[in-house]
Length: 171
Image (cartoon, rainbow, N blue to C red):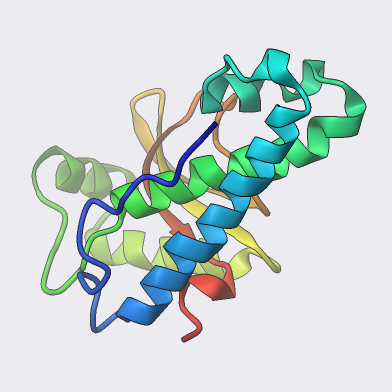
């Protein structure tokens, strides 16, 4: 079964931007719910238990129709949230540096232009989903995905993601 991996930092590491209580709720309850639901589906489908998270998500079109949505939503929820928590840093006074800064300047003109474009993309997601900065064929692009859809299968490499669901920030 899949387990909830510990955060790579303390629950209070994002303050004052995201408070400790919200981080605990988001990681320990919301992410845990996706893990629990995924494990229930896999328990009833033991042949799928040998697959990795990425393999499960990529195999959705070949799975029985009755479990496709459950796998997509819950495996996608685990995958997206793990990336979100892994990539999350406290932005206090930080700016992109090195190759990332160079690529942002090349593809967006400036860090400020990137921030504006990323904010607009995140705000354009209706309801739930994610905004992503991805690497694609040597360039940086901003894409969005609804619900728990992932960037897997799109030949995109996630660099930054933001969970635009209200549970990530509402406390």
